[in-house]
Image (cartoon, rainbow, N blue to C red; front, side, top):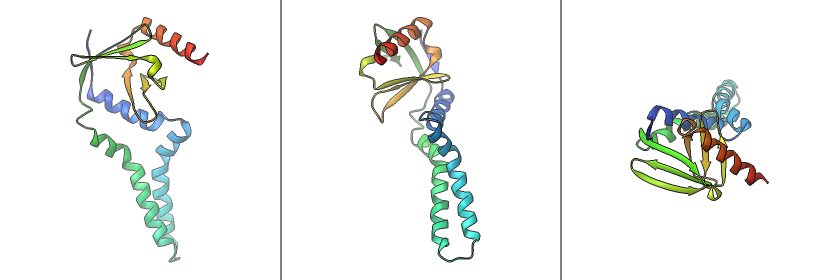
Length: 155
């Protein structure tokens, strides 16, 4: 059964993965880093020492970049983040994904890691490439097979 993976859901997963998908410390830095850098650049600009002007501008620009980076990365991929019809299943340690009539078979052993998040599962192919599928696309049998594979991989 094909189900719709909406644009809204894909954008939410994109932001969630950006802020919280790489650990708590990096997530905290990404959430608070931009505003803190802008705050400190404003504080530096209020100091009357001439040496701090350049540092204040650089820190403010870096803070703005950090603040708007997730929006710019999402806008760059806007056409890719469209609503799609998707079907996903796990059978015999193989992930089957059917998207818009095209079926892909991915052996779970070829994936670098698999992370269960709050409302989706993140499959990483390598350090820089990966994809997310909402957990509502998987049934309880798929979750059982995924847990068995992850336990086998840890051992």
